[in-house]
Image (cartoon, rainbow, N blue to C red; front, top):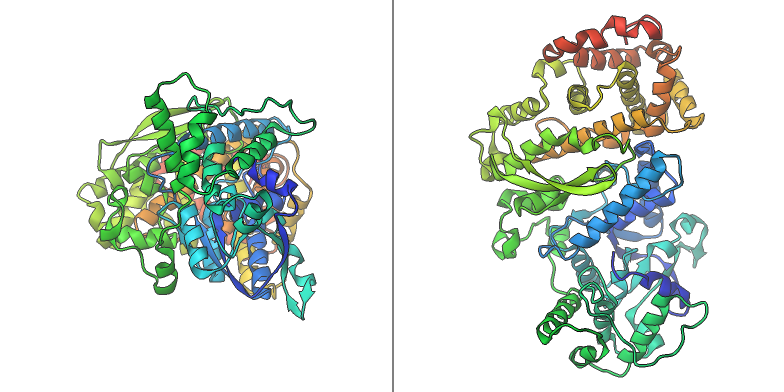
Length: 623
C-alpha cells in the first residue's frame, strides 16, 4: 500500500537510492510484503491453488542468505488493527482487482497476483521451524515496524512506499533492489554481503531541497491509504498553466510541482495553513475544515511512537492489557501473547470489534458460488465462540465477479453452549476436541488409525466431501489423499536431510509434476479451492480452541500442480495401487485415510457413491 506511484518516482531518480553492501546488522522485515514477494518473484503456481513445498524452499533459502551475511532478521506480520478503517476502501478496491485477475487466470489468460490460500500460515510455520524471530502485530504494523527499526538503529526491508516517508535513520531497503540470491557470490573484505539499494529521508530531502518534516505533508497531500483529497472533492490546483511536459506521466508532474511548492516552507503547520490556496472546491468552509483535519490525521500516521515489539522480542512479553487502546480492550487477556506469536488467527481482532471481514480470492469457476461458502459453517462457529450466539459478522465475498457483503450469523456447537471466551484456554482438552469434531461432523473413533499430525487434514477432508458445492467424485478424493502421501514422503525425506533415497512412489509422483499442467480444469480448481478454504478455517478454529488436534505442517498438505495432474490420470487407466507400488507404508497410509473418511458412521448415506463399485472404472479396485 502507501503512496501510489512513489516507488517508481524514486526509482526514476537514481541518485536518491544508493548502492549498499548489507551485512552484520539487525534487519526489521515487513513479513507480509516478504511472503508476497517471495511467492510471486519465484514464479510459483497461482492458478492450481499453490505449490506450498516450493514456497517453503524459497523461504528457507532467503533466511539462509541472511544468516550467511551475519544479518539478524526480525519479521513483523501485519495483524491488522486499523481501528478507523481508513484503509478499508483501498482494501475493497484491491480485492476487486484480484477478482478480475483470478477470472483471467480461470480463462487461461495471463495474470499475476493471486496469493494461495494457505501461504501466510505456511510462512509462519517455516519461520518457527527456522527459529527466525517473528511477531504478528496487533497494532498498525507499519508504525510498529518503523518504530522498532528506529529504536534498534537498523533498516527496514519492505516494498510499502510508506517507508519512504517514515524518518528511519538507518534507512529503508526496498525488496525490489534486495539481491539476496547473489549473497553467496558477493564478497567484500572476505565477508559475505547482500547487494542492495538503500534509501534515507536525508537523501530524498537533499535531492529535492525540502525539510524532512514536510515528507508526511507530501504523502498526505499526494494521497495515501488514509486520506485522498481528490476523492473527498478537493482537487489540487497549480497556479502555473504550463503545458504537460512531453513523455512525463501526470503523477510525476504532480510530485515535482508539489515538492517544489513544499520547498518554500520549513514546518508542517505552515504548509498546512497554505493548502487551501491549492484547492479548487465549491464546498463550504466546513467541508474545507474536514479536509484539513483529514490531512492532519494522514500526517500523524508517520509519527513514530514507542511500540511493544521490543519487549516482545526481548522478554517474550505481550502488551500490558491495561495499556491497550480502547478498541483493543475487547481482546481477552489470554489471547494477546498467542496473537503476537502467530498461533491465533489475526482475524479474531476484526471479529471481536464487529468489523467487516474480507474473504480471500482464488482461481475457481466464477459461475459457481464462492468456495468460501463451503467453509462458512466452520467460520460461524468461530464467530459464535468469539461473540456468542445470534450475533452477526459482515463478510465481503464474491458473487459472480462482483464483491458483495452479507451478514453471517454466529452459531455454537452443543459442546460449547456453556463456554465463555475469557476461559476458553482453560477448558479441558476433551471438551475442546469435542467442539472441534462436532463442528466438522467427525467422530473421534474415525481418526484413531490416522497419524496424529494428519488427523486435522483428514477431518477437514471429510467435512469437505459432505459440504462441497457439486460433490467431488472419487478421483478428486483419491488425488487429494495421494497428495497427502506425497507430502508425507517429502516431509520424512527432508527431516532426514535427504540422506534417504527418494523411493519409487516419490519418483512417480514427481514425474507427474514434471510433465507440466495441461489447460486448467475449472471443476478441479473449484473443488480444491473449496478444500483449501475448509482447511484454512479448520486451522483457525483449531487455533482458537488451543489446538485440540496437532497442527499439521501445512507446506506438505497440498501441491496444486500435482493433485490437478492426478485427477486427470485417475480418470484414465491409472490407479492409486499402481502409483503406490513397492512402498507398503505409503499404501497403508493412503488406505487408512481413505477408510477413515469413507467408513465414518456419518457417511453411510454416501457410501455407495464412494464405495468399491465407484472405482470399477479405474481398475476395479477400491482406493
